[in-house]
Length: 463
Image 1 (tube, rainbow, N blue to C red):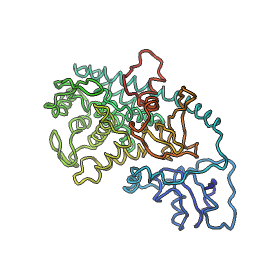
Image 2 (cartoon, helix red, strand yellow):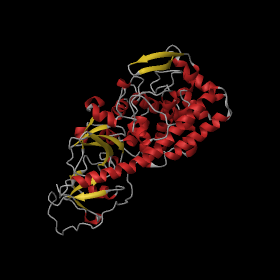
Image 3 (cartoon, one colour):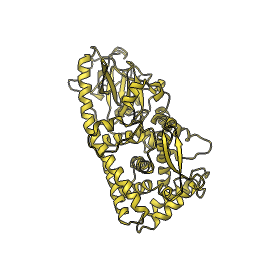
Image 4 (cartoon, rainbow, N blue to C red):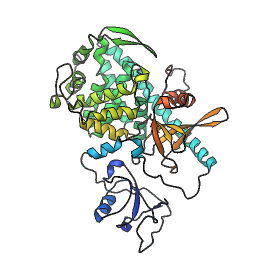
């Protein structure tokens, strides 16, 4: 196909074959490439926000007046016509259908073949820009993680100043999440570790993911702050339980005694309730985060509206992080698989998690979440680094290039490289070992950090 940019929406008409580049949940059409069939289709297209619109004259019905191709394309800022919820059940189904269906659309074809050397040069430039950004966000993550470990130790001794430090930490997290690109990088860090790294990293991950979900659900700054505190301390009670050594294929971990694990929500609430002015809503999130909507879990067997909204958010974020970062690395799911598993709960006979919370997480993470390993249409393998929310199937990827025996890191921006597309997502076992080691989770963070005091992890690493 040979698509041309259409700037003037007044020239939309029945019979015009168009291609929409925008958020999947911003329109009701079954595919982004179709022939306009009615005036209603035209009205819907005119109402899509942040739309890039193209048309194919060869597939369109004959025009009475030729369309002029614009000299300088730019994103059209149009009024949004999404429903109050932001997406429908059908839209969410689309997000998690098989990649073969999602990617069945024919990619835009360039008129002239791209110059390989120019592509490589641009990929290196994008990589350097991304590395600079990644270092800033990763530095922030490591600093916050270091502070959280210190906070947890002091909380256990009854240090009241530690609660103020925790409040500042949560404020720092919500401040970072005001920036879309930084948010995507943090989601990558949370999603792609592939192994449990202790209670502190799990607590911080759940705090980050809960804050992202809460923000997308429209919580106020005060509500986000209370949600963040509840999420950060949701497993605090585990630190008060007897610990046992557990041996895994990837090493040794200290885990709570299975016989007493059900006590940790109550223990955590009791501890945090001793601190003056610790929010009641945050305490509810701590004690209720293991409840389920069907009333099947502990500590009180609460169900549905008996469970606070904050707890419903934390329980989904908690489940997502445990699916992605299992204690045994070979049991960890890819971000795509974790979202798909959560989505299956929506239509289950006995609903355990909030449908609204799960759909919000899916909408935010998109079909190819940061950390997903993918194969491109040209056969190369990459890892999703950042998502373009206006075009979820065309993310930014970390790939590799071989020059003899030397392996170089490259960034592939699918929004720019329209001759490429994602063919399918991959499990780590499907990726050649040399490439997997290069792209494996935690690799990039080690590469960009030069300071000696930055924590190092053995084994699997993340971008």
